[in-house]
Image (spheres, chains in turn brown, cyan):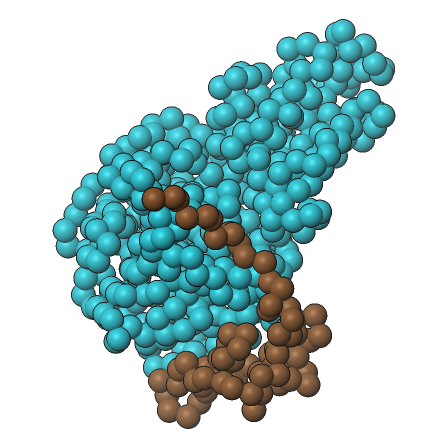
Length: 75
Length: 474
């Protein structure tokens, strides 16, 4: 399985369903996209994930900081 | 009637027929968000929604759309459910004048019943988290009252801020937070980060309904949200001391999360479907490390759906945006009658005002843009006469269509400040702003042919009462 949003292949499991075996919550180690395995394909499968929400490494590298980290006070 | 916690308000909503329990089992996605989305599409009397059978969970309790209709907003203020929007705003403005009302500190906060600390912190064990919109980067806490203090003046009760900021769950003990630069928590974070420090923070979830309204309200930097909640409730706001940070938090919260915003760190966040009806995100934002969670036994997870208006957030921040603008404008211009700032948290505003002399209405419009809230919002102002109800959109459209001569009455000012989330801003944070003066010109502005308006007949008011009583007696 790969990240539906950025196609990265390193995923973490954040949670298991309290009723065993119903679903897991997964997270991409790179872009932090988080999803439940029972969500619709448009949120969970790379091939069905909408183009306008996909992220690339370049997008992440170029993401602006909000708010910007301020300069340190001297002394 | 003031509520001390969310649960007592849900009981009232149910008694008034304004809470709907969904008894069939639902999927966490897409059902929870789709149901709350639908609540905003079934008319102005929509109920709160309560779910406790959610697939895969053993003990989920989820409340959505709690403020999501004018009936529910009226009940939150302790008013009859049928109170009109205009009357709710006027009552809100009347109670505003009671500020400040000192809070009441209590010791026996119910969220002391359960605790997670340190390595045991796991947000997924406490809350039935779920996704709202398709493009959201993850699961969000979007109805929290977030408490922080000014690092340069930590003992100043009024500078302690209580605000609502979007929080993305990015780990069992990690959140990303959006402190928009115009908001108070961003000032606190900037002060901490300038000193290379973390900023302690307390995030409270599932609050009594007025606390949620106040947390989303534009207020002066050194004004206490708790003292404003007391004024609006008509009773002191019950508060308690959070065990880790020592911050003042609502006594009745379902969940109190404490930790720090880690100084000088940013992490990819979002996107998130926002109150503007558009996604924003893919930016690097500060990160919260959770060190302690305190929670009531069987906590109720309160969330709200937001997206293309109208949704719950529009009811939640509608009147609370109108009243601060009304108060600030009327303090300098007593001619101002009413302010409707309910569109996208006041990106567009309608102001009803009497005219002191020609050109006066445009001055009122410019002043609205330079209020504290106006610096980040108020991109479009429509001015209407004192006898036009700004909450009655057909009347406003009549004023626009009959009074406006565009060449003289539409003023566009370039390159002003606006929240970065405003979709039409270019670049983000900068926009032009527009005044549409739909008032009747008065001397010496002698334009147009407005000398003979048709007014309601003197006997009409009597007939309104007569027709209403005849209809009621049928």
